[in-house]
Length: 329
Ligand SMILES: [Zn+2]
Image 1 (tube, rainbow, N blue to C red):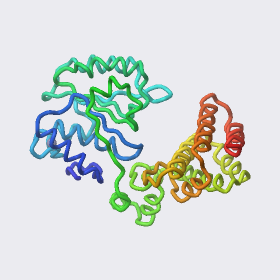
Image 2 (tube, rainbow, N blue to C red):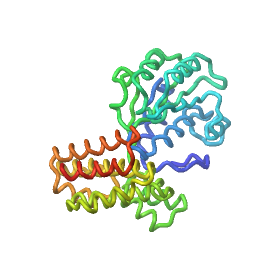
Image 3 (cartoon, helix red, strand yellow):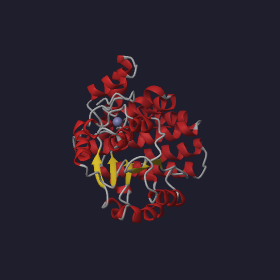
Image 4 (cartoon, rainbow, N blue to C red):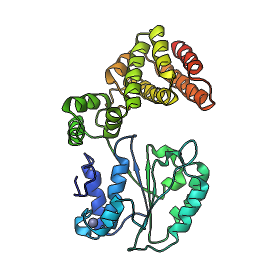
């Protein structure tokens, strides 16, 4: 859906966009909206679109993309739209930030009848910060709208969640994904290659196509999955060591390896098409050798490697221990 703002077109999720437009036209916007879905599926793009939808001066045609409010939101310059700032290791929100937002929520809008407070990637929000926000979401000022994005519902307190309208955002079909990538200027073959790896997850495809670290990490994680399926310890250690020189590279590689392990574990039990990893064929090959217990142990080994890296254990030492742990699963 293109709202003529010059911002990237939102691919797929047509029903969700229609639902949100219907809510806007009905005049019954929720006080708290959560957009949830896997990383890279377009939650922030849709959140941005929703803010324009909510504030657009032409409700029958919202978001028009041309009115003053639409333009101010697009430029992240609207005085009634506040973006909660991330902080800390988990990129959550500090209690101080939440208190500041609560104070802001009590202030009347500058420019209409709505103030919107955005908490993107709310998965990293601590229990303390969620509790600090709870009262404002439970008893919001009439003009306040809290908008959250998160990968999973489980990361939010049930008490907070029960006050929200939750809407799922889905990856798009692979062909829609390819169209969206070529519309952004990527070559057809590159777009098809990325879509083959990440299905209809446009955000992951964009990271793969534009970021060297992500591209290398995806290739290493895919090769690691194949090496684990083949029980090839030499290759597992070689591939892990190749990623260990750079901490960011290693982190991304382990994230994608964990996603591959998750896909293999799911494929071992069902034929679910939902994929989070970067190589379905390698995940399928590993699935043939995987029991749920073994999958869980492998996931545990990767989690331990993350904990080691967080404790500043060196990359080479971390991957050597990880290789031994994975091969003994
Ligand atoms: Zn507008």
